[in-house]
Amino acid sequence: MKLSKKSLTVLSFTLGASVFVSTAFADALLGSGYDRLKDSVKLTASQMEQGLGSYTVEAMMTLKDNGQPLMQTSSTNKVDIGKQAEESTNVTQQAGGEMTTNYSYHDPKRSIYKGSRDTNYMVTEFEQEQKDRSAFKNPFNEKGAPEIEKIVDAVVGNLKDYVQAEEKADGGKVYSGSLSEAQVPAVVNAVSSFGIKRLILEESRSDVGSKLPEIESDIYVKKIVGTAEESKTGLLQSLTGDVTLTGKDKNGAQHDLTMSLVFKLSEVGTTKITLPDLTGANVEKVTDNGYGFSSKYVGTYKNNVIVEKDGKFVKAGERTLEILSVDKDKVTGRYTETVKPGFEAEFGEKYNFTFEYDPNQSKPFSTFTYTNAKGEQEQGQLHTGSTGTLYLELDIEIIDENSIRSNASRPYFDGQFYRVFED
Image (tube, rainbow, N blue to C red; front, side, top):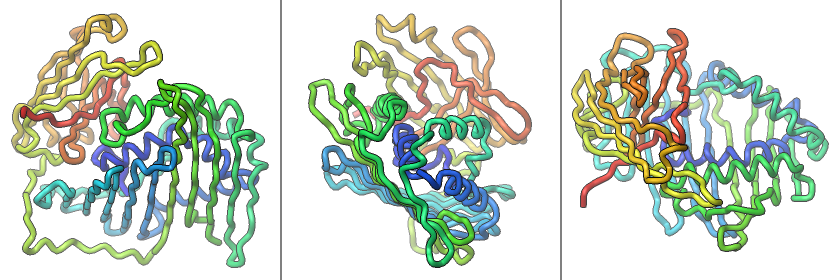
């Protein structure tokens, strides 16, 4: 279950949505068994990275507005740690009935991908085996995780007392409980209000985000219900939850946004992954240049600069990423920004640069050099995304041979770009 910039667009929405529900959801779910369940979550994350041998994770997320479905996404991810292999199938159904399916397979020698909008399987045979690769990264080992954990602990506070933890007959545990709007503290509602506004802003360019109501005022958590089951060995086997937030849009209309989440861990130690048989299928060979680039990515990609002004989201400008050429060892491109009159001061100086990117560089992290608006040299990265998308990272700092970070100093910067076509 690899969570990376190559994940599906719908997964980015799921993660974005968790920004405004995570704190409230944790508050309700953990209850009096908070510390024990947190230990279970930590153990499960650690074992999923290294220790379970193989396993299957199934997840589903449903989003509704006033009871009407906006989107439902389900995924099945199979992981074999010993073989360093993973297989994933994701299905998304949006309001109106449109359904998309994406399949991917990865092992140290190759990767295979096919989306429902693709006619071919995209197959990459790696020139060098990708050894010591982890399909899942333990988030509790990420930089800054201890500090975030302390913040969540503080916010949970006395809400630990609302939920009961019970012993199962087989030696496991069940955690369950609920909160009504009267039981949700002000700090949770403040985080939720900020989070949902950021979610709408960040997802406004996606298919799902365009259907989200623009909730602007009177935002608070209305209801939270959650359950979790832990095995006798301490692993989190399943988790379900419903979170309902309510608020008013710019016209004063009331909206209840309900997110339902389901997680299940199964077939621990018995999950089998086999290389898919593509005999007779349409196959497109992708050049192994590190990030799956090929000539099909030559073209223009854009996204909008969106800011909040006078209580509304407005377009302040546009970012354009052009891929000029792609060959085995080099990707060349151009990045430009345009800003509407009246937004120059808060946006800062516009970036306008060309670059050459070599994903095959013989170092752990391949970057390209560009010149920022101040004439300074900085490092950037480029990644392929799902069909018709690219991800651009700017102002990257190489910390050491094993880690990098993006300083994200560009105002209002959004690194996800969508392919545009001239009609």
